[in-house]
Amino acid sequence: MLSWLFQAWSQPAPQILSTSLDILDDPLQHPAMTCLRDLVVLGGGGSWPPRASYRDTWPPPLRAYDSVWRAMEASFPVSQSSTDMAHNRTLIDSFRSRMRSQLEQQVTIGNVQFALQRAESDPESCSQAAWLGFWLCVSILRHSYRWGVSPIVSEAQREISLHLPEQLEVPWRYLQRHFGTTSPSGCMTSLIYSNMRSDNRLEYSVNVGMPESHRSTEFWNTKLVRDMEERVLPVYHLFAHAIAFLDAGDLLAARAALSSANAVLRPAFKYFFTSLVDANLSQGLWLPYVQGYQGWTLGGVDGISGGQSLMFRTLDAFLGIRPFHAPEKEALHIPAAQRAWLDFLREYDIRAAVKARGEDGAALTAELEALVKQLRLWRMGHMRRMQPYESVHRPERKTMTAGISVVDARNGDQMIEHLKRELGQRLTQTV
Image (cartoon, rainbow, N blue to C red; front, side):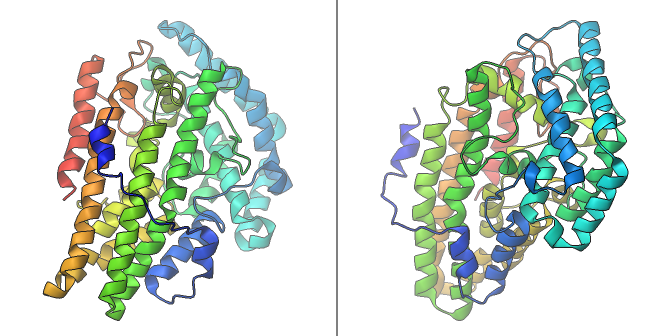
């Protein structure tokens, strides 16, 4: 399957190993490198993708949130969903009532505010890794409270507003300010990037007590996204170097950097498709037990979308693939350090800078076009590979994607047509 896609990526890549430490140690002085270093330091706490730290590294008053989730985690998923709205309303209300009780018993909100105020003013009292781990925990609590049961059900989807407990609202305001996001929901950074431990395990699961197949699908959903960021981190580094070389007038070095970026991207994209298989991510389980709770849908705001991936936003920004996201929409889910990196790439507009070189930039143009071609091939393959995952029939819920809310589609076929239109539009723009 997709052998036509892999043929374009059959060339071996050179050994280009670029880690977060390499980026931090790079002596290159250029605004592109400054933005990239800030992404690693301010956006990831010294590592990209971010490496969060958990309960024991948090200020003591914040650790109660971990205790609340541990008390609630096993009661969130159910093995069999019901289409009985009254039954589902009982499940949702019961889950929310028990979480409110846990929050009231375990969280002292005054102490939480004091700890977060101190963390804002004194970075040594709470590392960026700890902030990320706490963001993850509160995001999980907010999303589980929002839905009340997993798989999600139409009874919760019908809600147009929801009053969350004070214990979940107060820290959220600090987290929004710290990371520079505005959404009431979690995002890819808080719920996915931050949920993989250094020992290759998830810190938090929404499938506690469920069969191994459910938990494996959840694990691979996180692992694949993080693995892709790790595999393309050298591309970010090479993009920064290509810009710096171009500004310095060293067109040969700029071309070499772009050529290396193409070489790194090929096996990274191939890894994505060879890993996106039913043995890792079950087609029947991904949508109900992983994707569903990542949605939000309240107040016109959506939840996690694959479009929040920094990898694809970086490629689009670097290559000038428009339209760019509106700043206020991007600020919903994309932290400030990531936005600064993306904004730099967009404003620099390397394709325009190369075009201005005339004939001298022809070789660089060829490398940039090769990057565009790779991205187009990936989007073509992704559109095809995701169809069976998104089209799973779930009678207990309305058709919905986590990043596009409820879709006006009565059956799986209509849902797929909707997704094909959405993804096809971006494919058309990838030129």
